[in-house]
Image 1: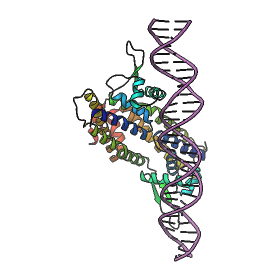
Image 2: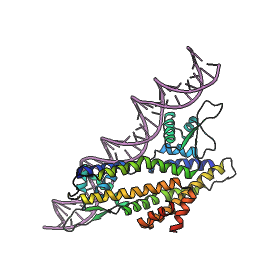
Image 3: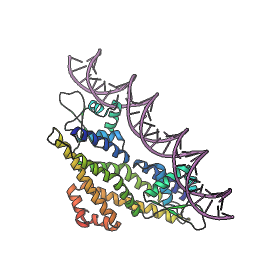
Image 4: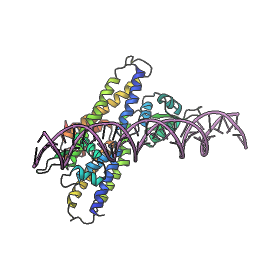
Length: 167
Length: 167
DNA sequence: ATTAATTTTCATTATTTACTGAAAGTTCAA
DNA sequence: TTGAACTTTCAGTAAATAATGAAAATTAAT
């Protein structure tokens, strides 16, 4: 395989994988493109490389910045804005974890907490319902602590630490 | 909050969370409904509870069975098929991990392996590209082992084991 | 074997989600 | 302070995804 071909393949596949994870295809592709760009690039570069519209690039870049995965870069002597993505994959992963935790896990735990406050806990079927809700809450809480540990730990410390016990 | 209200809330929210994770809303709702049903229920029950069509129920139930989250149950003396979901949340979680690993992580690692086989590794920018690809592959590989450990371990063994080192 | 009950399929339709492009907004050099 | 370079917004449109419902297939009781 040629390098250019491999890069294209990487971008496309990254987009496809993104889709499966509930991330929009273009956003994932832009992130992929930035990951394998050795230098910061502009909105026009992205438009050209992925053959998508200016508006599309703009909105998705903003989202990526919102996720903390992409940064604006100022190139002196240049009017245009340039963008880069952090190439440290462990950092990318922890950043994604951090955001998803905030956007999804935390609200879910909050909801489950509310659902436990039903009026008549003696009612037919209430016990079973509460058990399920509480079990999910417990599991979610443990996932939460676990992910916090991952975010704080260094890559090697975390992975090798866990492997140490269980392998 | 009344029990019925809480159940409805649970089903709806579960559907919304599913959407964020790339799982279709209805499938998540059906799973939620089955999770909080104390007894096995039929396709007609699901149609009625969620006010959705027969075809929709049927296809999503089959998907859920394909994910190993739902089972057909035969009720003696009854012509209709009944369905249940495993209520053990840890098992539900490991089952989902197992499936997503198979459907998503494994193919991704395979792809990344292929991308490392580029022809001219001395080419301009090849080194940087290979570094990113290899880093992702390494992280993916570690996630893979980690998830395998989770699948094999008992809930308490796994969580408390990890907490023991890092807390 | 017939038929009534039930499940499955899938072409069509509806809904949701993403993208475009042009207009409005901003920034900054002259 | 004007206007060219550039960025942002968003109404309209396109594409992707999910749901319907009726017909076909299957199942099992008589």
